[in-house]
Length: 199
Image (cartoon, rainbow, N blue to C red; front, side, top):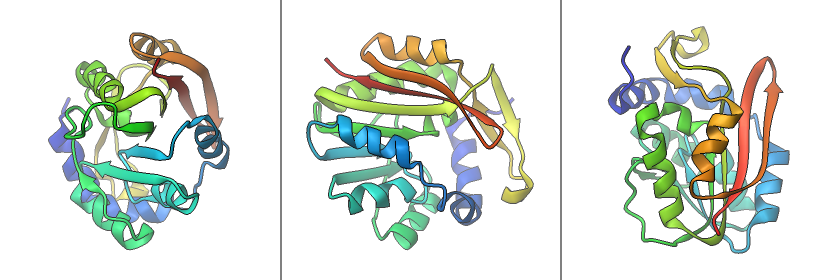
């Protein structure tokens, strides 16, 4: 089963516009506002910003937000739709300084990282987050890894890495204190979301 970052880049580059058309209107108001309420400062990272939906919201709320994505296609959509130029960067090894951000928002992007690199990614989040900083991670709930083709994305195959709530909590507990953790259902899709803090 292909599960490389290069596969993800190719898929997202090819479907960037379709993905943005479908996902841009779906703002997660409650989660975004809870995340903002937990921040002690205004400097945040949108890790895997895609077409910039959440990046735009944070910017409009007066936060100093940086967006990264590994897909050039998604970054083009981000610039076009949100008016913000994100940085092309791999979450597993980011070029940011230590203790740089007050918060990290990671909506659905950890599901694109091969499972064997998930701990490395969490360690990077810890490294660049300031003490007292907050991280939000949401992933699709389930077991294993799956290749999914959706008609709305021209049947372009994408690899999803699923997590159970206890798995995501376990990854984060090695470095963070869990603030809250839930499994939620959104229009038939089950998601695990965790808010955590660096101490």
